[in-house]
Length: 401
Image 1: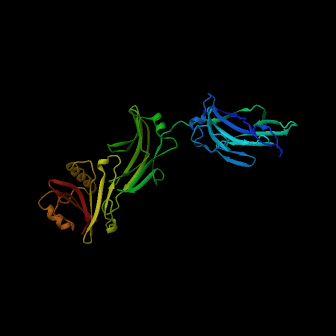
Image 2 (image 1 turned 45 degrees about the vertical axis):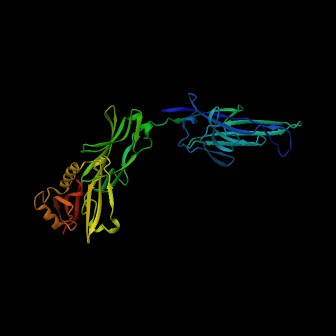
Image 3 (image 1 turned 90 degrees about the vertical axis):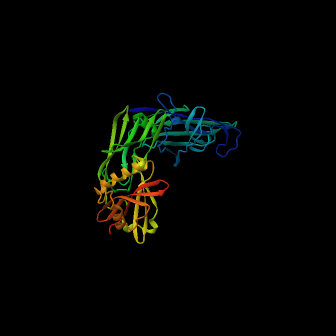
């Protein structure tokens, strides 16, 4: 829909003592300035409502190009030189000047609105000095080819109305053709893409925007507007723990109904020796703790650490926070079964002996519960006793012997 925008150009007249053609006289000549008010058809001052945001507005006059300089105050600041946004009691406006009122002019002032359109105001000014020392000034303006002597000039311009707010799309850094491939435990960076999706726009479209992985039960809001409080997450990292092909999506909800969906496919591989590690890559310099964020369910965030016993590297993975120890045991066991199937050794009298046989890093504070083994790694679910009734469950792994 096209909306008619009316630009009011006010030629302000003030008094400055000057001279004409190098003659010293005691008379005043009104300087030439342009004050440009930009209003819509209802009379609203568009400059009071950030109408200029995103517009690269310039002006040219006598071969010079003037960038529009904005000011952050609405307090009138007199005697600007150049092309500026300023304000006074009438509201915000565009200002150009001052030009000497005694200067002979027949020149174009061109406003380039930054969208390919422009308006041309030709300023004509002629000055003669009378015998009594007063100035005889003839001044008029030609606005887009039409002559006027009125100091107030109205320009009418067709412009496209601001676009309606739109939902963002779901993107992944580095993705191509709407797909992305990563190894498990590599960070996948999601973000919302679009020109017009900040809080004020989304609140017009939906009550919430929800991120989820299709097939999983859990989800997380990346935008909501509830009871006067709103929150928007424009980018987030998520770590996937299982190799699979999945569809990640955002859905917009309005009145508990899905009104918008956008999705991207993520293909997850498991090409490391053990979860996030290749055994040859572990070194003294790499020893330390690393957290792997589960954006959707923060209490499922995992933390890993590595070390050496002699020349044998090991890795330990634990729940980071928010889950009691027995629930952590169940979650870790179910997770490893999804990767390694049923354990080679289960809770029985010989598990501890097998653990000591298979692991160079076996510790007397560790109680092995289950053991798995493949060609790359030997893996165990262990209970680590800190003493005084405190313990933690972890997944521990070493290279297969």
